[in-house]
Length: 371
Image 1 (cartoon, one colour):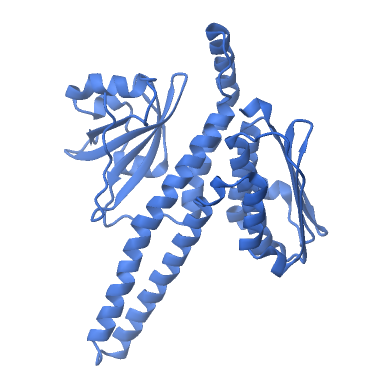
Image 2: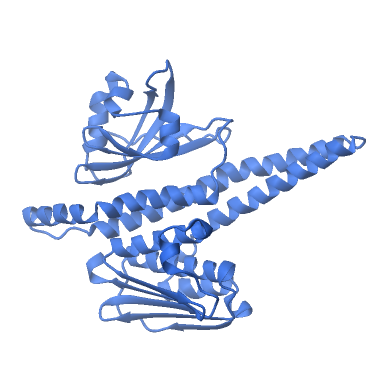
């Protein structure tokens, strides 16, 4: 069965929701926005047209190589006489669990998700994946024995899928929400130029809306740049970290030391992704929160593992409160918790110590286990 093309029209805004179900279509989990848009959806067979039952079974259970399977259909929302056009994309299929994204036409009344909400959705997906990690490892071991060949580790598959979804989200923010905000700014400029004699209250309101749109556009660009950095993926990990070090201006803003030792092994993509994102998150926290004057990074290969250490002499924080989501540290904690869970999913070691004298983060990721 051919993969169907997704919605591409630039005149229409599309919204991506996430859900998890089993191979029979029973819904196990939906993110908050999916519940708001689709209601209390319990099974895909009940929501989709009966004429697509065979196509849906193939969509959920097929393991054929090729592009991600897609299914274009419409949902019947329970309790309402309403059909919602939707395109389903199968992101991950492990055992009898399937993670899907549902692409719907966005409504004009929907509010744009903030940076924290976007990161929270990704973190929620990662948390659920990590919670099932050991169950999936047992299933993987059983399949390996039955097939007589080694399969790829679950953690590596999840890390690459998460990186792919980050890239997809960044593209949509830039080309969808970003272009809409840019259009709003242009129209506000046009309004102001055509109302030269407008009352001061009107002119002030236009300038205020313009400023809000400009701030929102800047935030969207910042988020998309952090999620999607296509240049670094074509580089080796040492080259990518050195580029990040320079583009963030670390040598100009701190007494900085970057120690990159030779890496004899070729790093799997999942390890490269996680190390790079950890450096990116760690340096962003130093710039925003640490009030440090010194920063040091060390990257090396030790005993068959990739080793990363990032250290600063800033004001520090309470590690326990941050990792467990204290309200005053929620924004910073989301990134560090996501980083820690990605490391654990790859059977790695994550150590974080902090106090008045500064903060030190250490990560060890086994190379051979994540190929």
